[in-house]
Image 1 (cartoon, rainbow, N blue to C red):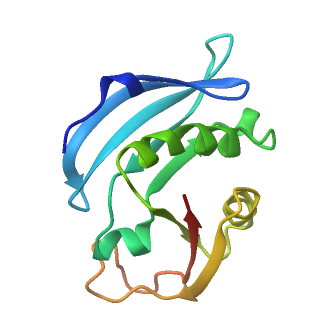
Image 2 (image 1 turned 120 degrees about the vertical axis):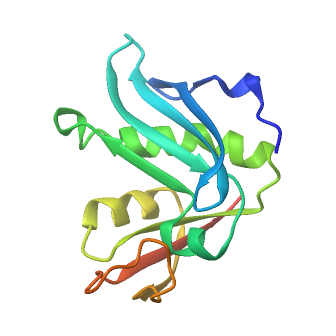
Length: 146
């Protein structure tokens, strides 16, 4: 896969994303872009990663990993970062993306719903899932068509 330098900085609503890593596929076998999430004044408030493509493991782990620092939670920054980063998935001709989180993580599930993603299912991942462990919590799997 060819990484696009046009996405080294992505301007979103009240935030911007700055590239911190481009990786050809060490996480779950899919290439990814990783960004810092910044307020417009430059304050780093979290990070976000988008995996490009789909495979067995990405169904359970999703196409995105993100984290917003505690003091900045509750301000819809995750939604703003996810909306901003969708341009990368679209550029790479992804027709849909998968969101995944433990079924008890209500904040993540609300974020997915704010994005307009549709709940596909709640499930316990199979033992051959790369991040499986004994007593893993069931996951909520959502899909967003692009």
